[in-house]
Amino acid sequence: MRDRAARRFSLIVFDWDGTLVDSTAIIASCLQAACRDVGEPVPDESSARFVIGLGLRDALARVAPNLAVERYPELSARYRDHYLARDPDIPLFPGARELLDDLAAAGYLLGVATGKTRVGLDRALAAHSLRDRFHATRCADEGRPKPHPDMLLNLMDRLGAPAERTLMIGDTTHDLEVARGAGARAVAVAYGAHEPAGLAALAPLATVHSTAELRAWLAANG
Image (tube, rainbow, N blue to C red; front, top):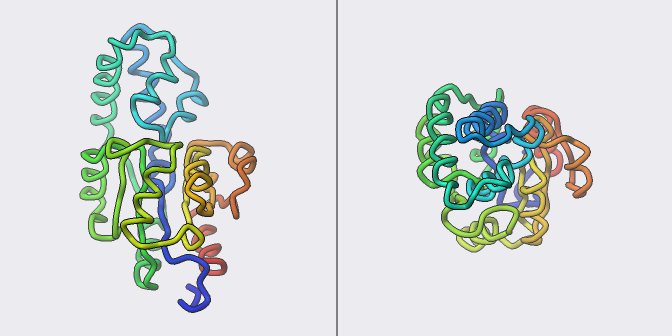
């Protein structure tokens, strides 16, 4: 990693699903199954993957746009049942733990900004023994969800990091919009939920295709 005096960033904030953990296929499948359970048209995989990272209510509204609002709790419950059955199978991406270890050892402030609920993120952090790796985390049910910049602004404020020293790393256009709204910079990862072309349209500093490539970019540019 770069010498501290030469670093561009002091705070690095990661999305969770599709950025640190390989969960996008499972989430998309569970959304499709939940729609099927309540008798709604099943979204194609691309549509299901697009909503990953949004708050759950916003995601469900997009994958089942014709469902009556009063039935959202039913759809949400079916999604949670499917997801919790597969949650223990969700792995970190290869190299993600080592990347976080390197960044922590180098003295970066680390955060998570995620569309997960607090209960869901705490469960995932405990499962992967990463609870103490991050200086602060922010979830969709603790403020305004993505793509609003609220969660990144909150983390920047809590950790005392100015926008020009903050980097958001995520796999969706929602993540890149969060960074833009907060005045921060962003790096896109193209191994998660959204296609590289959509990510590139929001002009991230870089688009990387593996955690190894991300690690190399941060070593040279972080």
